Image (cartoon, rainbow, N blue to C red; front, side, top):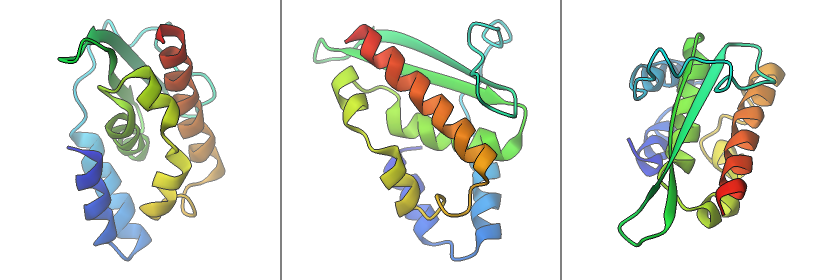
Length: 138
């Protein structure tokens, strides 16, 4: 699912409870993460829930390096948040990743004000890791 599709769907939801239900639904659609990828090396620090993030660098049709992301969590809502973050950043170049303002996206879809501090910190830890890995391959 694309980020635009996710945003459009969120715009149809007025109720916080509906937004959380949609996040859970999104989390069920995450690209599977292999058992081997549930490793200490892929574990994201700074999250209350267990969160793993795997990235692969490949070449796009334009010859530029692009990061493909997969993730997982043991918490349903967090899996949904990972889905949103992956839709924002996956299959993009390091320059595109650096230019993304995730806070603006979360505000646009109405999640910024509803996330608990712990989920917000965990989401930020995932985003920081993605941006650091993109910077490393730039």
